[in-house]
View 1 (spheres, rainbow, N blue to C red):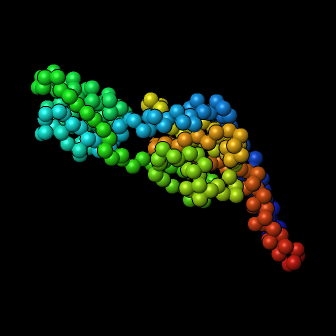
View 2 (view 1 turned 180 degrees about the vertical axis):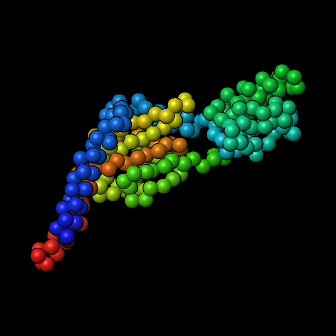
View 3 (view 1 turned 180 degrees about the horizontal axis):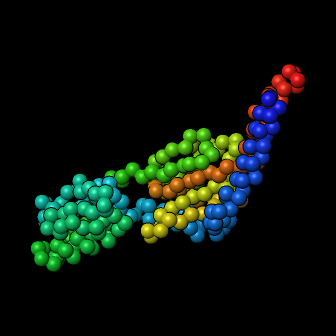
Length: 232
């Protein structure tokens, strides 16, 4: 009976090891330097710093109009901000300059002659990313402009012993489409390739190494082998 259990455990480990590479191949994503066309190193910095997001608090000033000038305009979850006389205006995804131009256009069309408008982001909404897969503490973490792939994985308490470090996937929503790229964490750590920026809304998935899992299972099964020979 003991021999059957040991054989079964080893057989299952071999099955997992052989199946894992096949599973990984089903996800066809750009890798190497091509990955940075989807997940840039720093190309998103300006977008993160300038674009207005749902939950942001805006300071909107209209010269000579104290009733319209406030520091606590909040962008709702749909990306709109409600401004007296201008009405409901889409702000999410726009820059403060884009919103300023639109407010001036609306106010100038009917109510104020040559309105002088300024728009700034007075408080940023929290922006989160997720880390899944073979890390010690999968979860959701807060992103900022300094968050990179290495920093994101460190926030999740580093990869597990069975992590496939050349199979780290990053998924991002771009222009309404779900995009992704594949990174080799060994290359990033060694400085052979850049450490890409992770922004709010991203999902990082650390792959599973069937080979590492196999040898882990063998090590865990080794005490049973010793017991088998003792009681044989």
